[in-house]
Image 1 (cartoon, rainbow over the protein chains, first blue to last red):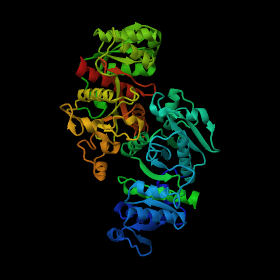
Image 2: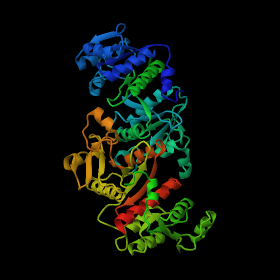
Image 3: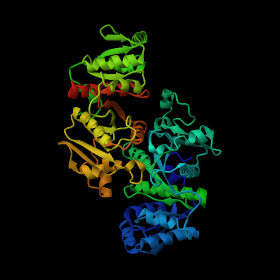
Image 4: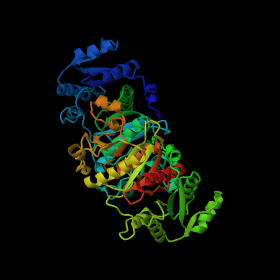
Length: 299
Length: 299
């Protein structure tokens, strides 16, 4: 079981899965891609502006000679080429470079040649905070604005797939509490009614609605007299909406100084989708995360 | 300017303001009250079950001889007595003990003898996190569920009063970003339209909507190319709803291991309103915070 993000780099398997990078011509993106290649994690396929790519590679003292390189300046075309490669099995997973997320996802969701599945695309962030005893998964703080009950269930399952790929035999999901007077609470009792305190899917334990302190602290649960099998030991925080996920995530990054890795699940392959402001190590961890998920689940 | 919570204890003025504690018979509450008395911060007036209070005091080796003690087992009556003492000027501020928040606030809001003002009651939390260079104010994560524009303005002003009482000459308010597709976004552009990047009230600078990373990190603002005079230097985080405030606050407490103090503003006196799960030091800081605000603003 992976309990720290650096283990993603160390516990990678020997297979160099093929990562296709769409609109790759970005310094930070390429730095992370080159490093993960050197670490034996992936074999990159680069699609984008090759003039710029060569320039960046030269600056970083990286030789492009052995790589598959596709010169395509148009972002829509680059996305189509990248997605089709994964569809055809020529690549194992995909990473967003210097293009709009919507452009990439439109290609991913294309009905003819895209990577659609029965699930919903959702964003899974994994935080490694020194004050917590294992990795903390947060979903969905990046993609689904205000998911309904059915969508939330798919979001939860996507995160569980990631947790299982990282070796969690039991996954503890804390559904975040929503105040009952709020608009967003139509499904406040979703868990309580359907899954509360019950084994959900063999080895997934869902409980909630739980406030964040209960999910993270056994002591807080004891003081408040809250009984929960996952108190203080949550793996996944299932938040009610994107703004809450975003707020908690940024508090972790900027105040708890946690490290992170992010991935989009729900397509036929993992999508590495880092934010511009993510630092180099976050991008590297995200690639390693995509590789591990692709390797354990999809390939 | 108070930049760390411990300074609240050290920079308290010599006046022992009178704190009336409603339904005081709680070990944790009394421990914090006794300690703040010993530190010369306040002079307590205790209302509640005096048998239990004497018992707890004995256990904590504290002599009650010199204090005003009122034996009142009924919580509604205890709240009324406490609030009336503040109304009449016999006490300077008020603290919630072992009673429901709603019972205390009902008394505070009584139209005949309560502590109503033109403002709105709102909760202000102050966090002291080692990773941030000064105190971080968060509002409202404890009282107003989903405030509208007018309410938000009052919530902001309440927090600014606290910040000014703690010596902030300029108060930088970051209005948290809300996704425009969400229900809660009726006022997403409140600041942008009315106050964006403008001096609001002499020495209050409001900017937003800003994502949390921009509010807390100059570097993140630079990478994202966001221009804001308060980037990386926010004093107050004005969040869109209680669940977001609660989530960010708990992430700070449990993952960033921040210390905190909380207070309710908007009445004619500060209300110290700690949560059961708050530890002893949080309660002590909250009393010292109430004292400083009462001392600088109200008394």
